[in-house]
Length: 399
Image (cartoon, rainbow, N blue to C red; front, top):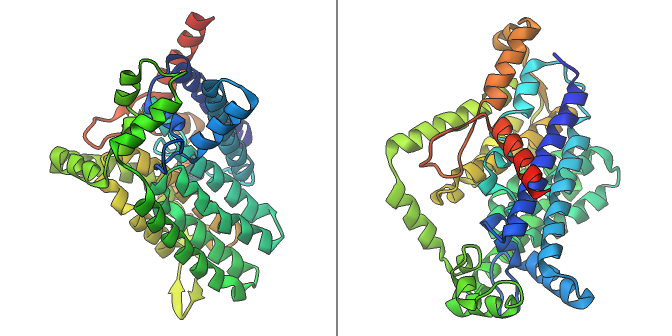
């Protein structure tokens, strides 16, 4: 098809451009969960998803810099960090396979937050930025112990979003394959220790966080120079969200549950995953504590670990994180020779199509649709075009 590396860079730069524009819009208007939730801090008590907000608050106070500007700069940092290491990672693949291109550019992956801007800037970007950096490190860093240090300190991410614990199996299992490949099986016990450590931290965090309305009032008190009046701050979505209990999300799910909508959404998730699933062919298995573990079983295990999150209604976000992690995981295993990419009927059929048909399929599959955040919503259309157009119009009006 067309030049893979050139188009990959252009695609990611477009996603980055749109992300920065919409993050700026949220910053200027002090609007949306994608910006406001970053303002939560520990000035009253320990609350969920407030570590980055606390660091920003202390930084802005110490250097006398506007907190909103610091918050916006922090978001830009994590988004650039994420795309930079994503580009660095996927440039390791000199892809001439059309099926691989469809997998990388699937609309349930990198395109999702660009097409569904309500999901843009949410604090899972901290975790995804680490995922991109970590998988790139597995490819490039020769110091085994340094990689283990990265993993040991990674659970601090749970203080920016505790739900990311359900995606940590991608990191832990990738590390297992990494150690196995480098003949450092004696360090496999580290993964057990890290897993226990993450679970304990998660339990302590959930038992310690304050969900009382007093925490919301305390945060609003600390933000009185930025969000006025006080009554508005208490009601703003993103601040008051810290007082929601886990059962609130579960109740929301069952209140909106309809079998047809769930089934339809699941089908579109499966369609988004198909190119990646069609590629996978196991080459090697590893033995961990007398258990044979293959790449496909590992991927399924990782996805299953995330299923508790689907009791909340933000299925688009969870699927986006799942698929992005799946991409890094599978392509990492390919480089490490644990899997090979299948070259069977559907592969050969797609490869033998002429360029015009390939471009048409790419436009329809990769750019023609996107998942919405909520499982109750319909599927979106032409996400990159819509968001790019809105970005340009916003800039023209802003200038």
